[in-house]
Amino acid sequence: MSLGARRNNQAPFVTCPPAADFDGHFTETVVERLRLALGVRVTVIGAKASHASFPLAAGSCVLGSGPDADLVIADRSVSRSHVELSVVNGGISVRDLGSRNGTYYLGNKLERMTLPRGASFRIGGATVFLEASEEQSAGAVFEGTELGGMLGASLKMRRLFTVLKRLDATRVPVLVTGESGVGKELVARALHAGSGVTGPLVSFDCGSIARERVMSELFGHEPGALTGAAEAQRGVFDAAEGGTLFLDEIGELPLEVQPALLRVLECGEVRRVGSDRTTTVNVRIVAATHRDLAKEVREGRFREDLYYRLAVIKLEVPPLRERTEDIPLLAARFAAATGAGPLPADLVEKLKEREWPGNARELRNVIQAWAVLGTLPAAPKALGSIDASLASLVDVARPYADLKDDVLERFQRVYLTELLTSVKGNQTAAAKLAGMDRTYLGRLLVRLGIHA
Image (cartoon, rainbow, N blue to C red; front, side, top):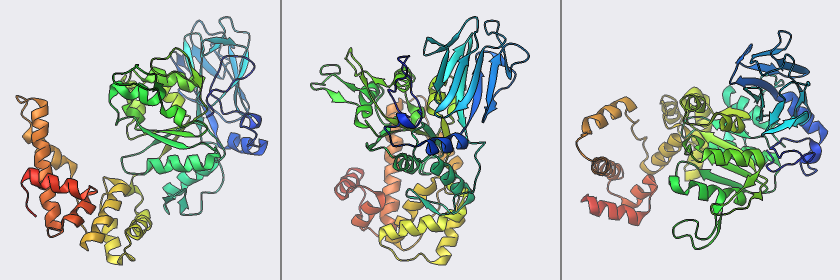
């Protein structure tokens, strides 16, 4: 996605433009390949329609209230034949057919315009979303077992690799979904590497920043705009100029910040906190979440228009339990990273029997533990039993902060005791397994009164 694009002096919009708009790096062949790989699904919100989601792979379709329209919209303010949509190089051509009430994009009336996949426009009281779809994709499945640092011999992973390759040399926005630990950031890295952009890949975790600082971290701030902010600071959009911005855990983004992010996506303009002027940015967006964003939209916790803007392409990374044939490949790589030799065959078979609720991240940690201990750590208990144990500790008469500190201290005590037992009191090995600084581990042991 190229933010800040302009065309014909009309309202600014975000676009996946034709070859000439990609700074001269793209050819008509690439754009044609993308057009064939990515179809469009037309979705109508705010009014009843004859199809919940209408596929458009090639040719054109007419939206209107009349019975002869390809997609009939039951809205009195929509003309019988209101607007025509066609898939063209660079996006979707939207042509108003002389409607009574007009067709509007970003609040501006249009007669004919090419919009990108992921855009939306209004006719009458209805909003029409143009979603990208890979349903029309054809061709062989990716034959290798590695792409962009990701490993996978399973059919599910090779299908994911196939789509990633089809997205090479493009900058369409992508939403990556999947459970925690499956490797969503690796997908973002592969997309960035294949995009051909010259700028950096910048990552931003939407769930790790205090709510009152999210706007500042995203868009930057001017001196004095925040308490203690003596100097100006640029945001991650500025830092990612000319490259890719990876918005991790986008589902955690506060609802009050979402309109500002949508505005940047629509217009390509950033306004720092405390500033009265805007600057244009050129950034490709990849977002990721472990949440069901469609459900979040239905329940009012995530803006629908922002969802469609981010999810031009939706990629799901399958959990490790659904691709056990990938475990030997991943385990061998993780073992090599620790300096260990080849894994014993019986150990690999034991790895394939586990459920892996923490996915590839959990597998990596288990291999690291094996490299230190020489044996596999026990599989974790089922989450249901953990939830039941936590529920038994809850005392609603106690303040939240006090009870949280109490439970956390109990966890630390049990964890560190088991950790030291597993390494026979070797604090250096324990710190390596826990992924913490050796000095910090020592301080924790003293505070909790735990002796090696």
